[in-house]
Length: 285
Image (tube, rainbow, N blue to C red; front, side, top):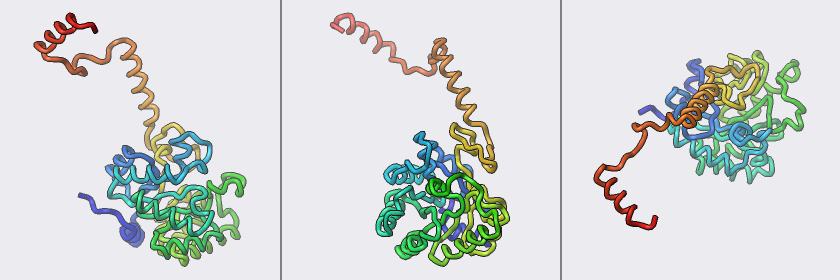
């Protein structure tokens, strides 16, 4: 039996300069495959609103859905380090509500940690969550929940000033009690500098190779419907096309009456079948 991966495991990997592997997935079957594939950590991202529910934005994810699917992923991958993505308005309304909702990810969703999209305004929230004993991954850089304020999806840290703001915010999040950092769409050189200057595990989501680990979305990695077109979203397999082909073959076999064959059927014993036919003839069926 594999050892359960913990925050201590991730910190040890960082200290040994062994990259951390992480994927986002949202269901039991995918989680089983993720653990079997050797993944260290799974993030149940609020991107499920788009990839599992068909919405155009992450803000449609709800606490009820996120926690239920977190629990499903945990059942499929009991040994990974599991991170629940706190959805829109689950932590912004008040610190008290943030603590209650984050606690639900741990108690009901069986998560090891929660992820929060942050800027300087969220330092008190991160501090309060940490004080409550809740591990927090601080998500910096591109923050999809705030795209209405940011204006567009764009790479972060392009100027020296913007890069310094990110570096300083990362240190403030560490001081506030964050247990790890996720950097989304941050310039590689900036992300590397941040990872080098903190003891926290720093995960790259499109932020270059110098972080302590990488995360890819399940649908991007396997080229499933909804896969992104971002530069960093490398496709390692074309599973979507294989599924489509399998379904087309199934449809064709059913329509051509080649499926099911006798080996796919459950058959009655001859003596019982004879009795059944006799009873049918005598009945009003």
